[in-house]
Length: 188
Length: 188
DNA sequence: GCTAAAAAGCTAATAAAGTTAGCTGGCGTT
DNA sequence: AACGCCAGCTAACTTTATTAGCTTTTTAGC
Image (cartoon, rainbow over all chains, first blue to last red; front, side, top):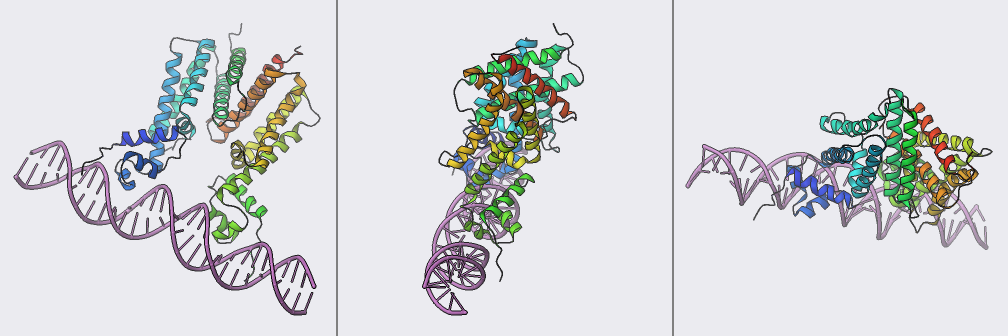
């Protein structure tokens, strides 16, 4: 009989697809989708936990890339604005992977730790133009992260019943940008 | 042989304890802790899903109570401040139940739907003093929920590596309060 | 106080998921 | 063409949820 031609890549990809479709990521589902028996997956992936770690690492990387790409060539308000929009959009478009993004990295997994760090660094970099230092920089990063994560997360879980979320988001981002600007050393 | 003397209450209580300890809530764990065989739990709880629904409903109720209690007799900035502190504290003290709070209610479960609605209403009520109406009220509620959830959630998952989260929280809340006040009809 | 119904807890059995062990046969390399 | 590796398989085991049906305690009613 012919061979399925799997690879770690292919397995992880299908897991990502599954999670973004909102379906539970089980080895059984995965094997069925890949036209293979369950134990065969262990030839490409260490197990369910290892698979989750791979998905998380890749998600963190892609997410950081998306944020970085959205902000190249912009600074201050324009950068914050673009990053916020990119954040919300990526989270909405890839709900499963966004969820994976939130997972605290396994300290023994260097790749995942690095990917986690990078995502935070991108946000820190966006705030560089405000001349924030020390505690101010930390507080601003946390404010930005908390706000974006909170909004994206509530939106994803259907927590906002009514429509008009775009408008609410725009106002929140604008307000946040002003708040952070007021913390900067070079306040106008 | 003597009887264990369980009740729905007792089972749910142990499930809450388990989840707040960060352990996975399984019927097996639960039965072991209660000194009973697994199938016996079905005499008190419909199953794992039903148990989760019970935990969620009670968590939403208790959470709403905590927020309401923290804000009685206060208004505007004092109310927002107290509510934010209560929110963060409750989420930190009851991580498992806070997680349960986020679950979208089963539309067929009237009690859970009611509990969900109440939690949001408490937040809406806190903003009443600002004279917000229509879209402004909706936007402010969303801003408050998103910010608080985002902060509590990132804090719970250890997302903030460094210390000093209290200070970051205080500043964020203060900034948010000013933001919302600026949306009100009776801006100073 | 006795009896009968109700309810609590049990054992046994089934289904789904993850995991491990060990086999086999396809495919690339020499 | 032969060899060896490795992808994928079957078989078997573990854990968890769930259902069925039995037993025994408790409780309600007389």
